[in-house]
Image (cartoon, rainbow, N blue to C red):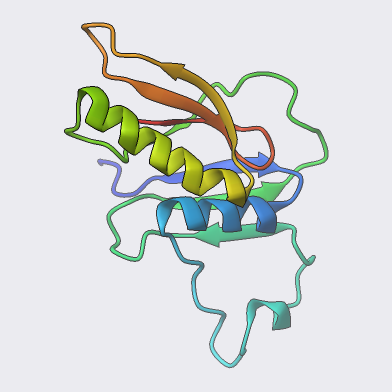
Length: 138
């Protein structure tokens, strides 16, 4: 049997905050509330203990954010590469990376190190989300 879908799960302190950040970064949307309810606030579960969102086109993986008691203390073992400049090279790529970085900083992202093209890899920009999880603009 082969895998049909993948969900990426984030452990975090504030699932709704982190999830809404990633919705803005990726253009994802939360699912509609259960039938008969106007909003997710009407659902009886521990408020803010989780958040989910998905690619409205159905192409990308679902993201799930769950509250955990421990804080982040080391570098992520897995991270997302946000592919915003696919196909661009040189100065055009650098300008597009900087533009996307500038869009994400007001959302709470933190800029990291710019890694310049080295003959094998194209330039990318390391960043952190609102809880310090590393990701790359690529």
